[in-house]
Image (cartoon, rainbow over all chains, first blue to last red; front, side, top):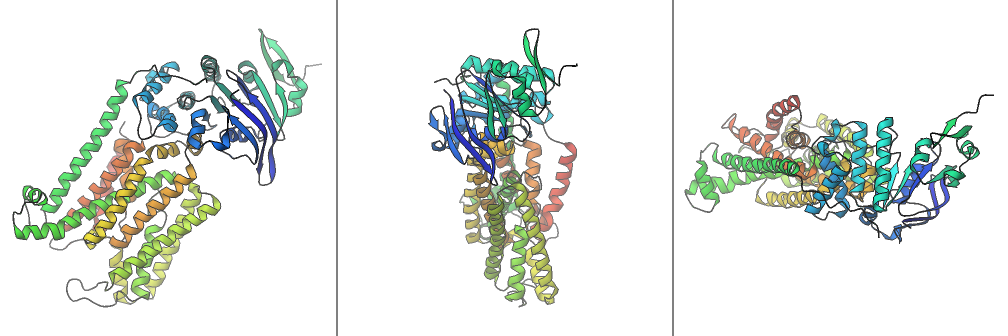
Amino acid sequence: MILNVQELNFLYRNHDVLHNVAFEVNHGEIVAILGPNGVGKTTMLKCLNRILKANKGHIYLDGSEIKTLDTLEIARRAGYVPQRVETGRLTAFDAVLLGRRPHITWDVSERDLRIVDAIFSRLSMEHLRLSYIDEMSGGELQKIAIARALVQEPRILLLDEPTSSLDLKNQVEILSTIVDIVREHGIAAIMTMHDLNQAFRYADRFIFLKDGNIHFHGNFNDVTPEIIEDVYGLPVMMGSVGGVRCIVPGTAPA
Amino acid sequence: MDVIHFSDGKIPADYLGYVRIKLLWIIGGIILLFVLFILSISVGAVSIPPYDVLMTLLGQNINHKWDAIIWNIRLPQALTAVVAGVGLSVAGVAMQSILRNPLGSPFTLGISNAGAFGAAVSVIIFGTGTIQSTIADPISINNPYLTTITAFVFCMIATAIILLISRIRGASPEVMILTGVALSSLFTAGTMFLQYFASDTQLAAVVFWTFGDVSRAGWNELGLMTILVGLSSIYFLVNRWNYNAIDAGNETAKGLGVNVERIRLFGMTISAMITAVIVAFLGVIGFVGLVCPHMARRIIGDDQRYLIPGSCIMGGVLLLASDTVARLIVAPYVLPVAVLTAFMGAPVFIYLIVRGYKR
């Protein structure tokens, strides 16, 4: 088990954002956190690597209680990709090299350079190495952010809406890459998502949040239209297209 | 235990070439600064050949008169220009990163204005600028130490207010910069208020003090500034990766294990200290802290690994060049360097803006 969350509570100005959230994530597994806007998905993700400090509860990251780890050790175990990726006047190589920060003591080593070079090859981005990230497209930038998290050599990836600003092709490309890397290296990933169809296609397990609580936690076979309607307040239909499971908002015409 | 391993990559030659160019810029900058340093000592009312300057600095006794000029006047002045330039510039580059604002500088936060207000308080209320000197200038400040201490105290009061409000409201760039803008206006208004009720002599003394001048510092002041600027520059260099992470966004930085709030507060405190000491000793020297980091950015890029040393060199070069020109332009009179920094720097900066970033 890579992550074990027990009775996680987070209060913001006396408002219960997360209430007794508990779940586990295993090696090689991808978990999608789902729910409407403002339900606490991002807050939960940020609690998992202590960007936000939970008011109550325990989080065990790779066997250690997260409160006992220093910030750099947490960053060596959990790679985080925020919702909004900011640019600067850095080359793509330098932007990804920044992901080695938790491992760097004084300056970059040969190993750091090799790891960054390998991730560029793995993500087929060799041609972008010396491009400046402020001139890149949204898809390229998102890949850079994911590459930066991967060179942290984490046990778990925490991805906050990794595809929210991308076109369909880029969404598929990035999610496929994440799945491949998680499977190849036996790490884990937690993704907050809005697109239920993408979540059902790429994640192994689903956590639906409602009013700061886990409303449903399970795999696709256990998800019902009623659960989704409860969470989003919208009727949906579930079906299959060419063997791929999907949902459509609305009800069947009479 | 499963961990990602991607160590089968190569060391990319194109990236190493890119890094080498950055390092060459820095080495070139250091050489330029050194040449300028020798030239700056060499020129003036008494012209000393650069080679003889170098030999004198290396300990040879070429000419007693030159020895006295170099060791007592020109060397401390040139060193002060370099140290103050480096200090103001490194404070500027740190503030721009901490505040995530290209207008971040010791001025934006009102620290320099607080120093000027402190000097005005000293001259007008404590009466340190009322006696007319008959030796050199018609106006002088008869107790420079009290003026310096008062200026320093007010710089630190401004810093303390910014840090206190940051503590209460969170050390966000917005809180810091808005507090700084408010303080800047407050201290400027305070200075104007005092000046309105000042006598002509006091008014002239305050204005005279605010013209930053690197010739004010002696070896003791230079020593103190050098230690502070040296240690601060090392601190910023040690934290270059943290500043790079902060430049990539708060959340990215936190995700990389950087204690963003602590780095911000420490960086602000250190930048403010540098500014306070320099302003207190030398007066207000504008432009360097704001513009030198941007000049360096346009040549060397935003990566703090190169930007911090690049800005330090650029600050040293600009202030030293300005001071040298200030001594020559209306010789035998010597202009305060603060008058020249903008005159010298602005055209170069405008050229760099027009030219765009070097890729």
